[in-house]
Image 1: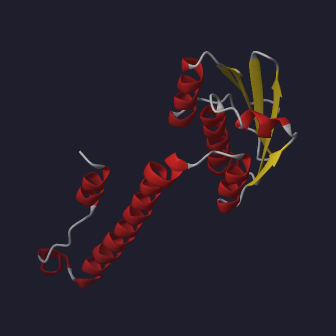
Image 2: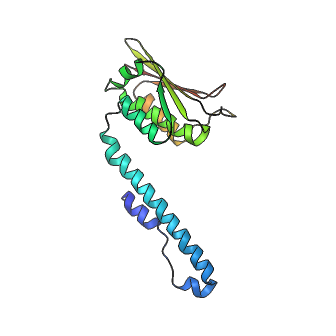
Image 3: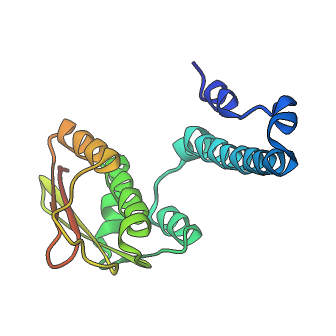
Length: 178
């Protein structure tokens, strides 16, 4: 089933009988709610379209990642020049870019932060990338949800490791074969 079909089925149809049963104010409220829901569906359709078309054609360069973060009012700060070299490696770039994107999103959703910091170190056989943010520290240990779990699965599939620490601040560390 296509995503667009799911989204179209999610629209709430207006009913002509509601006004006669409940009065005009309820009909207006339902109409307003329907408009709000349809607007949210349109935003979701745009996001799905972005990630299924435009996003897949990205080169995932550092400049693109910085621009994407900036579009979400997040400043992405490379702490060293090595991250640019890591993102030049076609074998690991999609995984590191996905980690950066996930951390930018989580900085907004969970930490109320405004800046994400990225650093990298590499040897002949491994690259390690560390991502932190300036948001509030987690109150408890981080429980991985969909995004972090998917990221961990991707990293482990290529022989890498992913660790998350939450004290004193959130830190995501990814080590992948280079």
